[in-house]
Image (cartoon, rainbow, N blue to C red; front, side, top):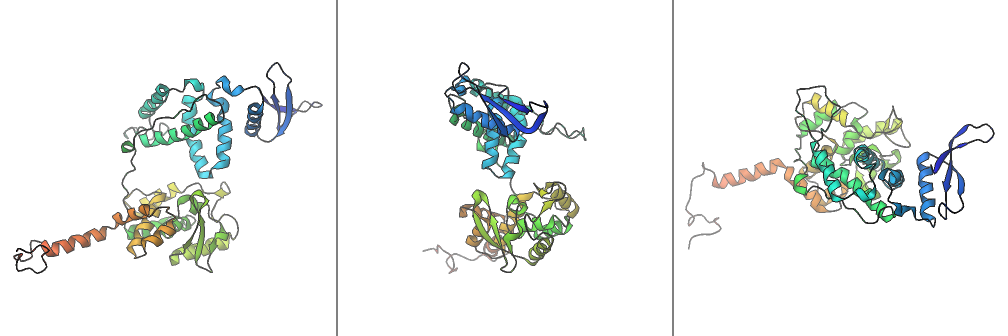
Length: 377
């Protein structure tokens, strides 16, 4: 093993957090090098891999197993991505490791990848949840498999660029027609108000940031106290791609909730999970409990609150350009999608059409009707 725990020569005891790195710069027939490294085992492994890559012995052409180099990629991925994205990747890893972990890179041919997709489609989504045996069995959806394949593709691209495999392997994903998201159903304003009122007090400011501020879930969960400026009635938000934007505090309930939260935690993260002493990862369960108690029939999730903000902001008369800026959309096309949720406008348009062509209206000849766009000649 190239990475081994360090033992004190006098006492023979293993020192925690200290590792001995072994490598041969000129190959097995050349001199051996050792170095003491301080850190975690994963960090020590990454350091060893860097030493191997920089040596004259091209170990990367030996066709290693996936598990031999996966820890190095995960360590780099953790450094380059947001914690929520890293957590999502780590949730997908056990399934990918179970199937691909012991394979050599040369074995990752298209047939192997297609076999993975087939077996995943046949697998049960939640095999550990068997409380209700009469409940219909739910299988893994193509959309979930595509997400797993996206992380696999990122790993294989890194492996190719790092010299671990001879050619770039691109997993073929399911087509878009099989992975479309279900249609969004925006709850009524009254139902959302009941939801906000029902949810636990310590979750309410987070919900208000998404519903009354249009923040994404990771933006709301990781907001700092210094970013909230009650004196200027604004919030500084750091969103996707570390892009910063300024969002006004839209409502009195949101302002009061932020004021109370700032009094409790004026510095650092505004919302801390008391169990982990870190920011919440999500509040899915709390939303489901509140939706059930409030009698909200729609499927409630984090992004639904943000969808609701976009819809009701346009409904309130806020310009579409302003809504785009507040929500942090890079393209106004994304913001325009919220117009389709304004059901009352469809009702008004139907009433206008019915007022002219409804069955209760007295028909008049086109020649006598000066408003007819195509009068008879």
